[in-house]
Image 1 (tube, helix red, strand yellow):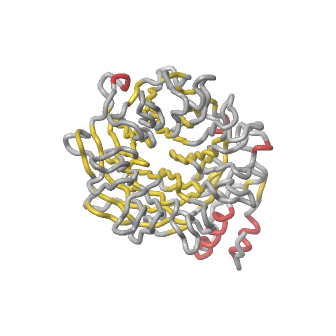
Image 2: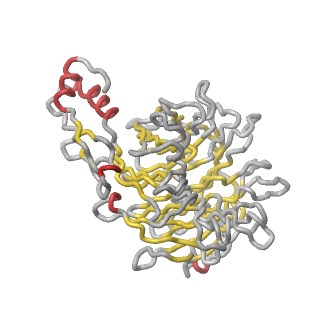
Image 3: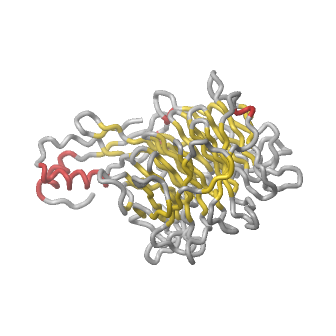
Length: 485
C-alpha cells in the first residue's frame, strides 16, 4: 500500500481489510487469493484528506474483479478459443479459428455463444456452437467476431472460392426467438473481389449495418491497398443479403496499406484502420479513416470524411491496427509504438470528435500508455471502449515472472475529458501461466470486460484457450464500493 501520513494513514489502517472472495460459480482454486472488503463512505473525513485516501485505496483495490474463466465444453488442443471476443449485454461470443468440425474439415473454426444468467458471469453457460454450413478446412472461421443485440457476425478471411485462395467470407447469425442454440449461418456475405482479399479479416455490426474489412483488396493499381464493405439488412432479413451496398476506400490510399485491417461502427459513423499507411515520410505509421453516413445512405463508392493520425507519429508503430468507437470518441491502438527506449511497448490514441464534426486531417486528443510498460509488450494490439473506459490488451506482458502471460489495461475517462495518461487499473488472470497470451482479444459492454487467452492450456490441452470475464464493482448509494456482477 502507498505510504500515507497523518489522518490519511490512520484512516486507512482502521478501514482497510482483506478477505477471500470466490467468484460466483467458481471453486476456491479458481478465485483470486484475496479481495479487499468494501470501501466505506468518507462523510466524516475532512475534505482535504479525502483525495489522498481515495487515491491510495483505488490503487490497492481493483474496480474490476475476475468473475469467470470460461472454456469450451469439449475443447481440444490448439483450438485457440479466445482468438476473438465480442460482448453485448448478457451475450458473449468467442471465436475459435482452429476448431475441428470433422476429420475432413480440420481447423475450419467455430464461434461459441455464452449467456449470462441473473447470478452473473460466474454461472454463464455455453448456449451454442456456431459453424458454417459448408465450411472448409483452414478458412479460419472465428478469426474475427462482432455482436450487437441479436446479430452475430463471424469472419472467415482465409476461405477459398474455387481457385481464389484467401478470398474470404463473413457469416451472419440471427438469434432465434427461443434463444441461441447451435446452428449454421442465417446469411452469408460475399466479397466482390478475388484471391487474397482476406474479406472478413475484420468485422463490425451496429443495428442493421454490418462492415467487413478486406485489407488485401487491390484498388486501382495498388496491390493490398484494402477496402471495407458495408451491408445493410434487407427487409426480408440477412438470409437474403448477398452483396455490399457500399465500398469504402481511402482517397490517399497506397499499395500495401492494409486498409480495413480493423473496422468499427457506431450510429452513423464507420472507422477503418490502415496500420501500414505511410504518413508523410513516416513508413508504416498508420492512420484511421472516418466515414459519416451520407444523406443518401451507405451506397456506392465512398471515401473518408476525416483522416486520423498521430501528431508525432513513429515509423512502424502501426496506428489503427486495432480500433473501437463509442459515440463521439474513436480510439486507435498502436501496438508497436515506442515509449522511451522501449520498442513496441505500445500505446492507444484517443480522438474526440470536434464540434465541426469528423472532417479533414485530425490528430489525437490524448495518448494512453502503461506506467509499468516494457519492451515488446505490444499494448493495445486489441482495444475496446465502453461507458467511460478504454480497454487495451497487452498480449506479451510478463506477469510475476511468467513470460507472455498477458494483461489487460483499463483507462478510466477523467471527469475533465481525455488527456495523456497511464492506466487506472491493470487486470490479470487469477491463475495465469506463462504463454497464456491474455489480451489477444478484448471487448467491453456496460460494466463487463472480457479478454481472450487463446494460448492457455486447459485440462492438459495446449493452446485450447480460455476467456476471462471481469466485472466492475457496484457503487452503493452512500458512495462505498461493493462487489457487483
